[in-house]
Length: 225
Image 1 (tube, one colour):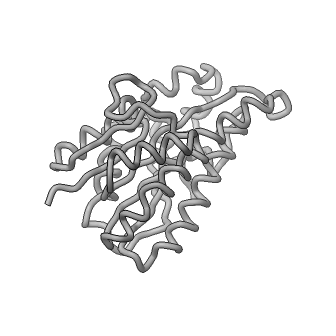
Image 2 (image 1 turned 30 degrees about the vertical axis):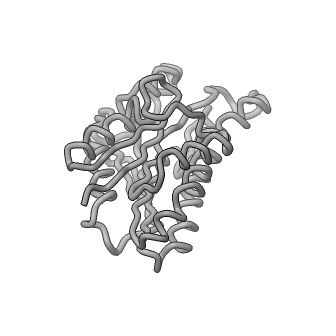
Image 3 (image 1 turned 90 degrees about the vertical axis):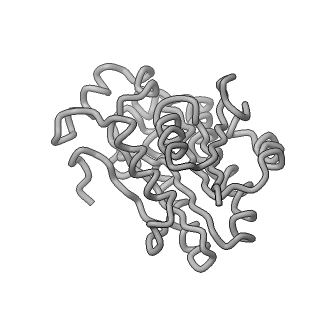
């Protein structure tokens, strides 16, 4: 049986790496992204558009919520209402919209895998990235709650919390901020997208059967809890 995976932010960075890795496993991948090259071009923060997209796609066995933005690189007291709300709209509400749209189909089948991309920033907090850090902490909490809600349904929900990874997302990060957070990694390097994709592929598989509501760090040793 061929399984279907929906991957948001699937046209670049970690989403593209996950799409490539799952395709190699024989999974049918459907990418959702703002990029024109996506299978479905959609804004994850728009709940009505996501509902329509889910109707077009049909049921999915695997959902990987990878779409995200870094947001403003500045002290919290300089962050505007619009900047704060935009980060939460994409990173948190986007994840919520996708989960709400595809969970009913997974529950009906009695099998599903949901992988939400968080960040080490959601655990540790990064200076001058308050909106991003807070949004990823929210993704972690959502994952833990949802994992408990679906614990007996056959649908497993886990999060991945990467440290700095070599992706286009970091193109918008101020050099001094990037240098600081990379310097926190004991391995003294950024991670590679394919390394994260291996973890995502495992979490999307039948090999995972007794883990839900968990947060998997991939941080080059930065994680301390």
